Length: 148
Image (cartoon, rainbow, N blue to C red; front, side, top):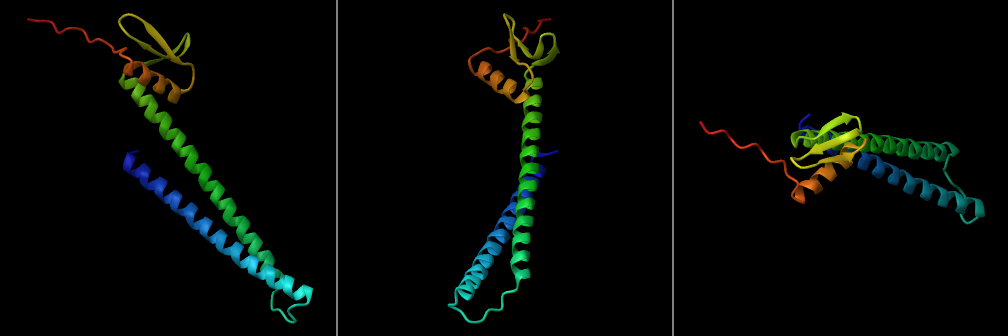
């Protein structure tokens, strides 16, 4: 999947999370005003009120629904970001010549002089380790071209 499509999906999920958050905040404010009015009525400061018990229940239910919706979308977003990071890291490792070996298990990177075990199972950590190694000068030397 292209980066542009991923950004669009991330933006849409983030926007829907923000919409749910705003709706939940609105319902909380409405519930607060209803509870304040009910408190004034029950304490005797206000003689009549038009608050129905179902209004309070409905507000609480909607707040809970918006929170569930936000949490579900945040979990999906975090999972997608994790998968995208792993995929990007694996592409980076393979493009730099690292290999996933079974014995000893893990990502390996080999130069002309030495071999490095980058990480046993975490692809993202292995890519970070390889970036650190390459920044330190452990570059693979390419074989010299043969002259005709």
